[in-house]
Image (tube, rainbow, N blue to C red):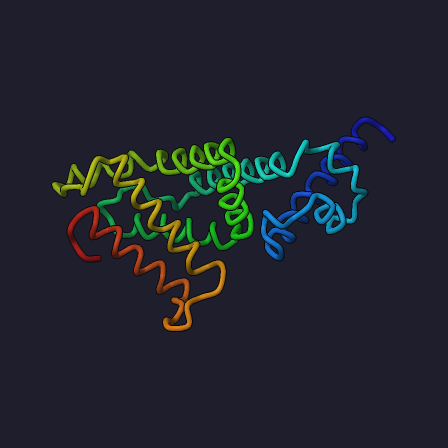
Length: 206
């Protein structure tokens, strides 16, 4: 086997392990998942895991890196809107995060569960959220330029937006839903969050 073939085989196995982990996390949760569960799901020998990851936590960090890369790619989209004095820009970001969470819900849940039991990982996950929120700081410049008064500093306002959308996505896209209320559809949830955030930033309705 050539060096190129070995690298391709290794990359294929690493990808298979990560995809298998996401499926097992979705079924069993991160805390209940064993490394052997992941290798069995991937159809790989148990020992192959350690050729790629030192631990389950290291695999999860690799998944977090994939999420960060996907988020960066979304930010480069041609239709990316950055003027938060325009509700369409707020809606674009709400929709992007909502769809991102839906596509990666098992990983997002696994990250939360790992952060609950591992202080080092909790810091890593927190820094990920801070970085994602910081990327939006400049989006509020047009809000203040248009004469609107933000509820707090730009940094804190963005952090509150991020937490609101993240918490709503966690509640409505994962786990059992309360029996005494209906779960909103994607468009309904995105529009409600957009109106809530935009009114918080500008004091105006959409």
